[in-house]
Amino acid sequence: MNPAFPFLTVLVLLPAGAALVVAAVPSSARLAVRAVGLAGSLATLGFAIATTVEFSGGRGTFQMVSVHPWISSLGISWSLGIDGISLFLVLMTTVLFPVAFAAAGDQSCDKSFVAWMLVLEAACIGSFLSLDVLIFFLFFELTLVPVYFLISGWGHERRGYAATKFFLYTLAASAFLLVGILALVAIHANETGVTTFDVRQLASTRLSGTEGVVLLLAFTAAFAVKAPIFPFHTWSPDAYRESPAAGAVVLAGVMAKLGTYGIVRFDLELFPRAVVTLAPLILTLGVIGIIYGGIVAAVQRDLKRLVAYSSLAHIGFIVVGAFALTGPALSGAVLQMVNHGIYTAALFLLIAMIYKRLGSFSTADLTGLQSKAPVLAGVFTVTMLASIGVPGLNGFVGEFLILSGTFLTHRWWAVVATAGVVLAAVYLLWAYQQVFHGVPTDREAAFTEMTWREGLYMAPLVAIIVFLGVFPGPVLSRITPSVDRLLEHVEAVAHPRVPALGRPERASTLSVRVGTAEYRATRGGVKAAEANRPEAGK
Image (cartoon, rainbow, N blue to C red; front, side, top):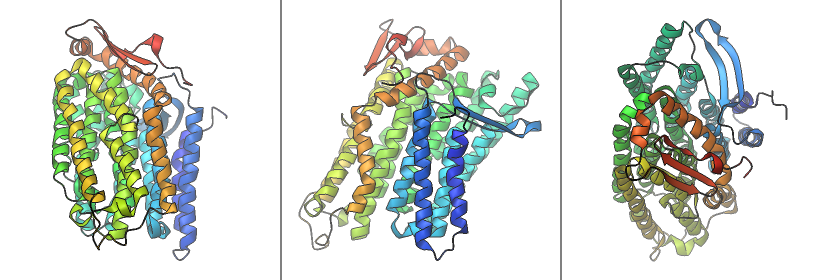
């Protein structure tokens, strides 16, 4: 393919263009609305796969960069780029949206529903690809509008309350992000005489210790609410619970990653010294989220709220991996963003199947489903075990890298976080036992097996869960170079503080090996060993 071809611009414009086509289709043409929506999302998936094939592994820099001046006097441009950190998040997004359309049922024939879903897909992809912080902010905020209407228009009983709470929480937090962006740009302009919103140039801004900490807190406020991170999570159980099936898939599977991606892409890139300073605090919040989310999930009787608090715990693992400031932990955090999106989406879809048949999310109303639907129970088991982190499934690889990488530099945080794995086994196995074991009552007598249509859209998610659990090498080989580049930037700006935090106390060198990738922690920092770095095609 032509390397000058605007891959990334097309990725953003494809779903946006499909939304415009849907807007032009008469509301009465319901089958045409469904066809356009599904075709638009599948075309975007196809183009994301082509972008992945075109992506050159082994390079940590941004690729396929597309820059077009927008407001030149202010240094604002349509600037898109992709690296190993954003590549698989974009691919995950384009996988989950067609699945969400397929699972939506009659909603996928509703013109407004389809249009909002396509707008949301374009905004999410744009957020993952933006290199201009103001363009990122616009995409980041644009996601609020379609999610609000998806929840309020097609959600469950308390959808109005949940949608309003979600919108107000995230909008208020984003005000801090906007102020932080403008302040950072002003500081950079004062230093260099150049006004720019390009993250690659802003990364060289010299900030005092106080400036860095204040700006980091401003950026992280928005990201912590969007993810969500404890204690900024209070909107999420209600929003996840009241969302329609497709809304829950994209809200937990994709939208939550905008927050964690923002932390990795912008916090570590723009404020490395402040990240080192505040790492113990944010690591502590991540660990509290892991334990708190697991304990609260264990006492839930509502399956959707259980998965919502489980998601809080898993986001805690990603936060710990990001702020451990080691190669394996950060690689694991990026991989776990993808893993969490896949298995959490699958769990919400399976719960939606149960609700469709029995009209309840409560474990008190459900029992003995395994005898009535063994295939559905089997798929639920695989997805549940992936969420727990059982070896051979995708959840294990990310959690192992996060915990082992964190142990190299922040061992007590890693030890406490490990308890989250045990808690996940407790609440998920307990929920499975309540719902699928036992003798079905008269209520469950009419419960039916998973249909071929449901199996069709669940199959790719299960395949990804197994593939990434057994063969994560191709993904990690593309993530690792970008992680190395980012950590080298953090070390260069924050030196000698990162090596001081990262130096193992009892040995001059420690290492973690995953497949062909070896990560070493030394007095000079933690990153992938050059001699053992996976090759691009492996």
